[in-house]
Structures are given as C-alpha cells and as structure tokens.
Image (cartoon, rainbow, N blue to C red):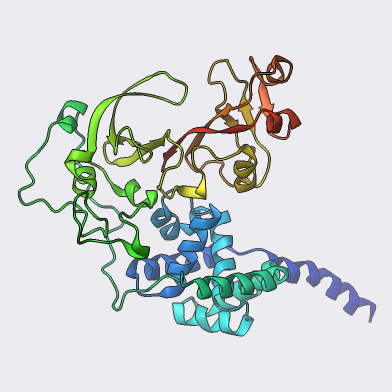
Length: 369
C-alpha cells in the first residue's frame, strides 16, 4: 500500500503538469489549424477569435499576422483558446467536438480541451454572458459562404522606392491595388457606397497596416484627400515627410511608408472617427490607457527629452505591440504639482498627482511588427 501511495504521489505532479501546460507540438498543431481556417474566412469561430483578440488588445496591430502565427505568441495563443471556449459556450464536450472538426491531431484534442477548461473555467459565467451580449447586439462576425484562397506564406517583397518616387503620382492603368469600393470603404464624394453600420467610411485602422504604397492609400481615400508634407515625431523632432489623410480635420491621420514593411500610423487630433487598435485615442485619460495595459507603466518626465512619452509598458498588454503614446497635462498651472512629474525622471502612472494634472493622450503612433 505504501509503495502504491508513493507511486501515486510521484505521478500526480506529472498529471497536473499535463493539464496546466501545453507541449510545443500540441501548440504548433493547434496554431496551424487556426491559421488555415482563419485565412479561409468561412469559419465563424476563427473570425470570432480574431475579433475578440483585437478587442482585448492581445491580437496586436496586425491581427492577420497574429492569427496565422499564434505559436510564436504564447499570450495570444492562450487567449485564442479562451475565446474558442467562449464561442463553444464554455462547454467542454462542445469544445472537444470543435477541435476534432478543426482537424486537430487526435492526440492533441484532450490535452487542449483539458488545458483550456482548467485555465478558464472560473471565467465561464462572464464569458457566456459576454457572448450573449455580442449576439444580442448583432456584432457576431459573418463568415464567407465559401473558403477563400489561402495566400502564400512568403509573398515576393514589394520593390522599395524612394520618398521622391512615393511622392510622384503614378499611372493607375492595370492597377490591382485595393480601391475604396473593393475594400468596402466609401471613396470621398461617392454618394452610393455605404460601409457596414451606416458609417460613411470604414474607419478601422487595422486595414491600413496592409498597405505598402501611397498609391494604395490614394485608391482607398481619394487622391484629393491625401497630402504629402513635412512632419515631426512624437517628441517634436523632424521626421521627414508623411502622407496626411483628411489633413487639417478631426480625422487627420499621418502615414509613413517603410518599403515592404508595415507603415507607421500617427494620430494627433481628438474627436476622431478612426477605430484604433486597443481602443486608445487622442484625448483619452491616462486611467483608460492603464486599464487597457492591465497594469501601471512609466512615462518620461514632462518638459524634458522625450517628455510625456511612454518609457516602459512594464510588461503589460501593450508591451511589444508597436504602440507609442505621448501624454500631456491639461492642468499644469500649479507649479507645486507639475514639478513632481517634470524633468529627467521616470514617472510611474500610479502617482496620484497625475490625475489632478488631468493627464491625457496627446499623440499616438502605431507600427505593426
């Protein structure tokens, strides 16, 4: 009997470990299945996962990249399992059935289901209630009727052009770049096109991270609404030229192209209609950004080099996601308070004086990895 108990106690940690940690091959198998189905665009569950990852911020700036490379982002992979669990009404048996439908290897199904349920069972009630709200609001993603072609993993890099070439208008003959109509975006002046939900344009910033040329930008928003002119970075330093979309309006957006890499997108105007990643916008209070990040972070002291810019996200949800934020104090009239957060220092966002200073987002920059 003693030998049996000793043997049982030896196996117990191993059994528990199997339920609380995924092996590399299981994670890769699941990641590959999600990537394939997501790119086909005709599976509602994978589209639901993408939407939820985007809302939570875990999906980063390029949700397509995240969804096709989950294995390289453990946090996103875990969150994707949570949202798949939510999609299946937090029911273990339904989840197992769905894993099989996805084509997950038979040896991976039960470990995946057990891992997911053990990790998120305490969130079940909230997840089910949230899904019911999403359905009630009519915001569940709509899957395509038929599978869409899966793009090649390594497309041929686009030719890198100089800034002078970018600034020059090129012929649109035989042009296959996205247009306002093909992208579901109403081109300015077109009274017939309407985006989903009745909005005049598709204001989702995420669609812009796929652009690689100024011509694509002009095709989407109209050449007359794009201006090429000088700009500065968040710290106020000369940053060369940028393409301004809807310049000198509340919806002004700056775009700097980087060859075959994702462009840098910057916002400096409050009251914008754009739907930005993580839901952060110019004018948002500091408290909101702290909530999105999931923890306090550090900013550089105001009135100094890079003053007001986030110095470290302290390992929060926004860390490593290509987000740079500049804050300003709307109520800096009291020198006694303001001096506490100015100068060559790092300021932690949990300092009570920041709330009294009414610190808000002044500028925000996005650059997909």
